[in-house]
Image (cartoon, rainbow, N blue to C red; front, side, top):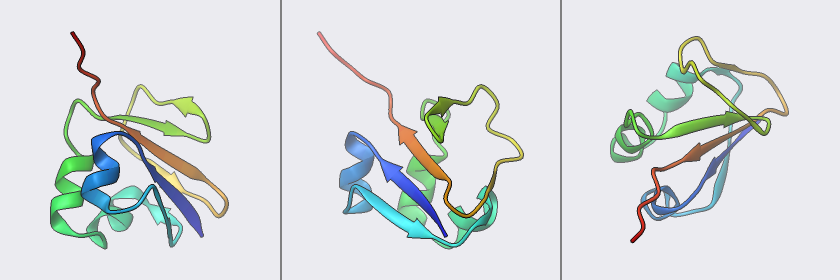
Length: 78
């Protein structure tokens, strides 16, 4: 199992701060989520951090058992 972590507004969309999911390709993991959550996570402005390391390339992500993938939404401020 792997863990998804939702930060900022994505936590509201997910309805929780984190979720345990089956390991495997990210495309498969996201396909099993609610459609509105999947769309929010795939927004091009959302950054991904795998096991604490920000990813520059979002392609080819495969979650292994024990992995943590955090989704970081864009931050706005004034």
